[in-house]
Length: 253
Image 1 (tube, one colour):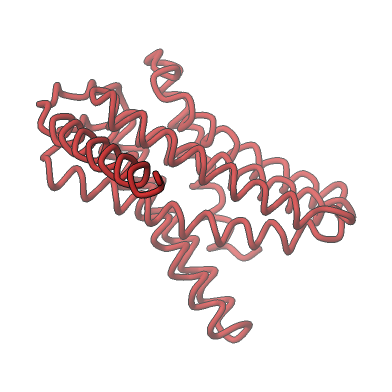
Image 2: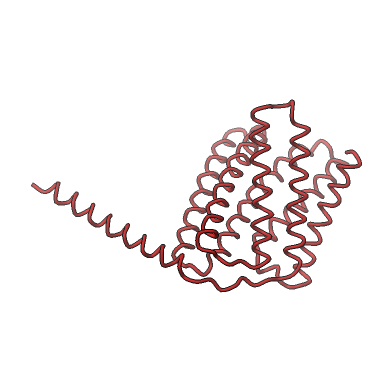
């Protein structure tokens, strides 16, 4: 590991520790449990990998893929947290969003389980890489969707939630772009893409460190989003009822 890589590694870990320390000191760890669980997981992953590489190098590859799979799943919970926080005042929309995110996570997890079936140790690396690629793209689409709702309905956000969305959205965007370029250009661009992802990760941590420095309550929103959801829901229910009646009458002799 070169001097610049070491600088990025140490600065990243220090920012992660700072984020956790400020939340513990301010007693708002429980306000964003998924986010801080992810931050804790990433910090532990970094430290454990460094220790194993130095002391037990033969176990490093297995630990790498296990920790990578865990952090990919924990990363999806950050998207869940963003949705839960933004849509907390909107019961109907929030319920729909939880159903969609839960279904997506169940399908992706089932696909990963099928990929590991039979020989989990040998297939752990390729399956984790595939899981990461799928979840990154899915999260990018989900974050774009929630951003569209925020812009359309001018949903107010506090400083914490804004930093969470901006930082994680930037990181996911960088990850999707680098994964796409890597699949097209292969090993020729590995070094450049690796550095681009590291720098994107550092920018994300800087955004989180500033934005999560102290607790900021979300402003109270209006109910225009929930009203639109209820209206669409009523129209959909009415249309489905009419379709059902039509089918019943058409099948009668």
